[in-house]
Length: 346
Image (cartoon, rainbow, N blue to C red; front, side, top):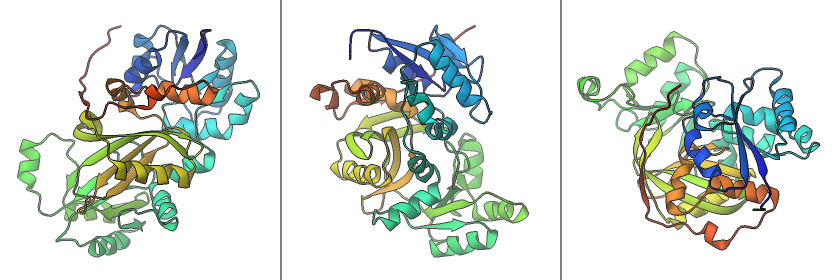
């Protein structure tokens, strides 16, 4: 990267992974970072001196205010962490480009395809890219049919809203679970639920469109990718050895060519760009099966630093046309990591 100061705006300063991404970006001494969030007390405010409050993505003045911040602070590139912001920033990318400001987002079409889990499965299936068996459900009767087709009660299955963030709405349906054990021996964020319970909920009130799919029994992976308009630049799978509330807290970087090739096909088919996260699990036959795509930087991307890969910084370099050394694309495979909570005081 050039020696002169490069001004970067990172939104989502209160996101769970914000602290790690700030750490990644500050690895380069010439980068001048501004952190932003809609919450005036976002964690990022107390981790980095240059902080500014911006509107929520749902507010009408979101784009205009972010653009004003960029002009005031001479921002050259925006790295958004919040899923809802991606749509507004991508739709108005031309306004930023007219001011010489780069926005690290994929196209509107690619974001829409990725963010809607049902649409994403349908799209990839139409391109002959393997996805788990699935059904799109809008009524309790359709849910019953999907459960039967997926082998209930002999086989567990999963469901989640077609559009949701994080692990919200995700459950594994199984009648073999011991509910007393779940209550007294597991913390409340366990994802298993009894079929009768979920059917009672779905039959009693309206619910969002659901993607109901087969349960994948193998190891779970979170894959950090850097793509250049659909072309894979680097793909780094990490096995999720332990999770809390859907966030990886222990893992290991695995050089799995099958996973890498699978994710490369997905990136190309959808035409994704920049930092992209792909969540998957192994099938009973050891093949990768897609869980979901995050068309943005992932919170645990900071773990890549331990493997010698700074993916947020690489995305900025790529976007601005700076040279990237081959050593920056060479992960230290088999690196393990653990994450822990810490505090800020104010």
